[in-house]
Length: 351
Image (cartoon, rainbow, N blue to C red; front, side, top):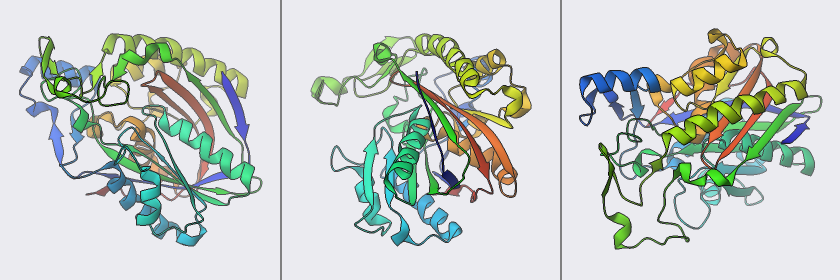
């Protein structure tokens, strides 16, 4: 386990943007009424936000970033670093972070780079930007995390299409002496790469005419090799085995218990999976917020989206201790323990 602690870094604000286009799983015509009821009960996903053609993750992050900078009253020339965490970049190249640096009007002295992670992306991203701010003398940074996942899902694949939603988020962090430590534990297991994968379109399997041919994998599951393939059983088994085990070890290392935390915010994978983890960890339901019914599984954006959606008013004028857990594609997972105090959380933007 990669366990470490970073001091003197404070989260100052979190903002989120989602598409205004709402898609309800009750309208998904590939499922019968009884199947829809079972889907909503087990996954927790009733509706999702779906980007219309032409909208990108960076568009969502850009609008959230503009709003957050304004509400924080931060000058753009003060931003020293911008990190963009996503698996839905604007282009193969250049890096989307550098495009966002220009769109936002940040100075050329601003360091900008991308990280290609999904479900664990927020916890990994926090570790990288906090580490950079602590080690380098940089003062202020923006962590932009999000995904347009729906474009990668086949509408004829009932194992993926009803689950995913789109969102972009921005977290503002600042070097602040005596800010309480942020503790991290990060893990990975590439042997599980096939559990969640888009097989073609990268350098390993270049896109070809064959890549776009739709195949029936199983009843109700039709997709091409350019679309997301999800092995639900493998992901479920990984999540209920590795995640609670790692989290329990993390609590031991940090000398904390479920009683130490005000909230436990998980990646919004699916309700059944997350509830299994919650019960194994011994957290009461009132400490575990969910946004999945309204927004679906929003990949890397799900943790900050849930914080803004469900906890924003509670964070405005008080201090709360949070345990965050991201887990999924890679396979990759991690945990963060941090205190949030007087965090600016604008209302969720709809584009």
